[in-house]
Image 1: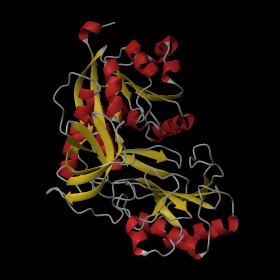
Image 2 (image 1 turned 180 degrees about the vertical axis):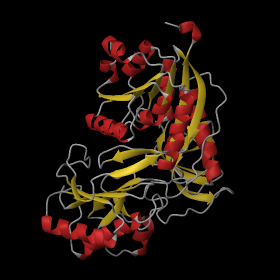
Image 3 (image 1 turned 90 degrees about the vertical axis):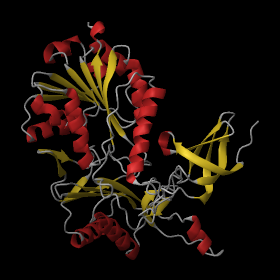
Image 4 (image 1 turned 90 degrees about the horizontal axis):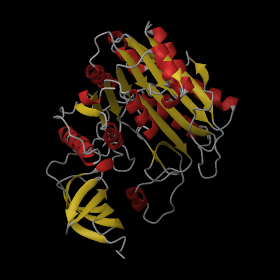
Length: 474
């Protein structure tokens, strides 16, 4: 049996692997490393898994730094779990993301690939998100440095409003300044925290399932509209009104303010009913000249700037001439389908979540898109002969699944439908590669375009154009 929790000293980091883990090779063994290191660093690694050919561990000491390392800009770097690549120049981040896509498609998909287009980087590497969710906790997480600074004194218990610490469900890091969104987002969060502490409002205890303040969700659109949703455990009208009034007075730029009562054990609000306290109850965002209504439960690309870039790639790959019927699978609130609608004869959007379809229909009407229809349900069940007879066979299928990729039943359904083109938009190249390997029975990969939506993270979007093989005509 190979020992766990052993320390390997002075390991040279050579690259990156899946999920943003650093990569090293020593004595014929591949070592996957967590802990804020980058290629060129020399580190000591404490192993948590130790197999014959590979191991996993965490960097516990850095002997020397890569000459390409830069100083992280955020005081919370290395603790909150977001923006893990701040120590790396953005140009180098893009290189590793491009390589990640190529590795997944070749290693998992085992695909014959065309030359891959250079990754499209983000013009905004800070303040690029349009939505953040902060969590209240009655016990703030303290870093090792903060604990050591106490010199053996009792660890203080103080509340926090910020982000969950990775792999610790009950630990929340109190956030002072976050660079993911523009102001007044930091002002909103800090105003709520300071008022709550001053007035002794209870922060939630996730272990005991008690306390009042649970979550704070902020959306800031490129239109300038700001939507805030305060999630509380139970109604307390006097304190709720006082807190919300104080927030509106301090941050008058807020255009919509809601509150949601969540007595459940989980933080999901999709089965709850947000109440409008101030404003119209939703925000409006734009992609090109299309305007989209975004409610407190709506999904929308969290980087509006790069979302527009991503959709332009998708539309370009579809190669529409105005005569095509386009099926938009996992259509959500209809953003991709509406975005390509002017170049299509007809758009058919399909999505499991009924509320999203309601939003998609409203968004189509708001943008005077009359050639799009949206349906709630499973593609495998909806797309039968009668549906095709009524709506037409697709010339182009656009699919944008969640991180888990497409269910194998849907992949088989796509092979059965056999549309001439498929444009596959993915937020997880690993599951995309798995699905493309199955679609390889009928389709060839014609184009590959990575798009960076999330600077300073390992996450990457990838768009692939598939064309049906000529010798597979049905």
